[in-house]
Length: 319
Image 1: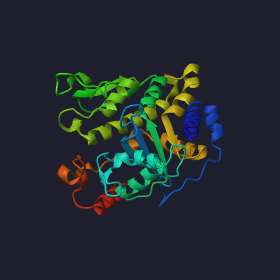
Image 2: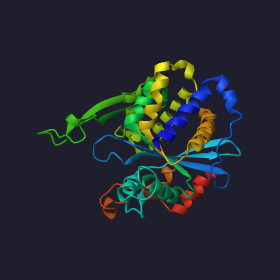
Image 3: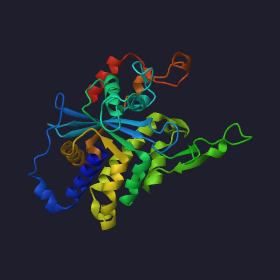
């Protein structure tokens, strides 16, 4: 199934890159997508990847919502620390548990299926498809298009960003384990980022103030997604034969989905046709609260300030 999304995304952007191909595709019959109330909703999960502990926990959780009639696009961020009564754990464990238990859903096991069920409970709208992105591989995709230009909205410094490959290390004689961290800094304004730098920007979570929250990190991940999409939409700035040859394998390694090729193409074309200012970004962190940890297995978690019905109503109103 990874090859499906890799091939679909690759073909999509090549179509958009060449006018002659675009013209021929205008008459191509694309797939009819599953939908509810005129909307098709795609769950996007981001995992750290690699071999370290927790590599399949979904640090990034978003829903791409397409209104097929109005041709509008929305991105809904779901904080990873939300508590799930079904899982008796945080929602970012759903992909891990689904694969571990072998639920029937695609080549990666049941991770996509269980994640869709859990996220439907959280946001109160049906989820029709899912895509998982391995960020350790996706950095190579960003490098393959020559990097991306990111408009950073606010300056911040993170003094505790984990050094790559040091996740299981300790610092003898230092109870703070300072040696496993590095300091990263981002100035506000437009910056060109390669894949490694973009990954740091998307995953940083220990800055002071708001930028150290998971809510800010979710918004930064939205920015990276939309910026990369826009980069693909302007291939003249990066396209070379060697990059075109490398992209299919890179995308194949970085993604997995339960969509068919035609469905992925249809979703991709809808998403690609929207400019940054046409993509509505929805967050509901202001409706969440963190209860005492002793009530939830000594974990820092988030729960509704009132109830889930209020959150569901808010999301539907925003859409």
